[in-house]
Image 1 (cartoon, rainbow, N blue to C red):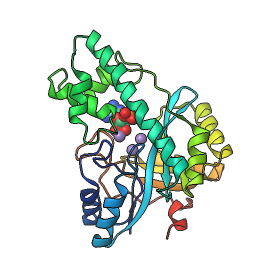
Image 2: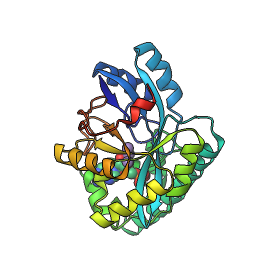
Image 3: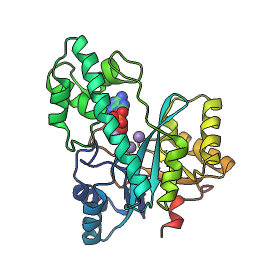
Image 4: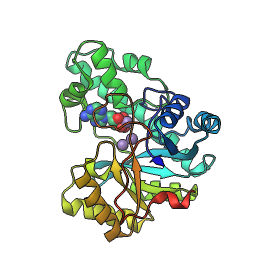
Length: 277
Ligand code: AMP
Ligand code: MN
Ligand code: MN
Ligand code: MN
């Protein structure tokens, strides 16, 4: 049994369509999958159709952008009711903020002599409603301003880099509340990727717990065994369930794993999916 509760399609910044994601996951032996596009649930219906045909179980999901104490944190919502108005209103607000952010980043790029980033990036977005820094990085690669995507983040787009803009995403409390309102389970995505001090991490976990968060990803992408053991212990200490996800975007990505394939969780974990199956 292989489980993957975090991945992306062309509805956000992934390279495969929702149906292709399900087919690839199934081919890799996955039996339980959640599609978790950034701030958007528009791919889930097509994924569900394919999941029925492919004979795998699909969980409704989303990965929500949060600003927490000045940092960007991602919260995955699993098993959410897609039609929930409160959650959808929140996601819509996050998406419209993205176009404003693109405009600000494009203005900064223009000052560096890189023109046309707004239109150029929109032309590349697979979903005009969901423009991410990945698409801006694609624009910079395609126009020859950088050689590869990682350089676009290193030079221009990464947090604190020359053309980054501080963006206000949603509050942690309102995101957890909206996920719960949609009968879902809130999960801290890839906690090992935020570069937090032990104190900051404790604060994040306590704040998340206090507002009704349920789980953390003990495995994400290409996590090490050491990461998994560490986060399994932290989950136990804080009373969190454990989730796992490839965070797959495309083949050969910088941090994503293979779609549909996650290593087993350490035995002390209480898996989040016992509630789904
Ligand atoms: P956004 O939500 O628009 O800020 O975009 C964030 C997305 O950019 C993440 O979900 C990743 O897929 C991608 N990303 C972030 N940092 C990097 C990086 N250093 N190299 C490649 N992709 C990145
Ligand atoms: Mn992404
Ligand atoms: Mn993420
Ligand atoms: Mn992700």
